[in-house]
Length: 72
Image (tube, rainbow, N blue to C red; front, side, top):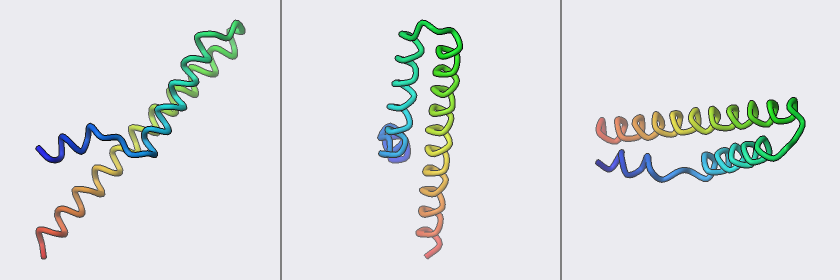
């Protein structure tokens, strides 16, 4: 259960990525140029992907810490 609660709390790095993704999504929704809209949408996806990767790495790091602590 503790692992589930921790996964709901986003690290500052993940939060920053998601903020940047949200900014790009907002920009994609307001720009009139189709190419710019596409580019903002693509960059938003990249920020979201980066946030997911960071979450996965942080989760793995936490599992390793728990495993090491249990081995002591």
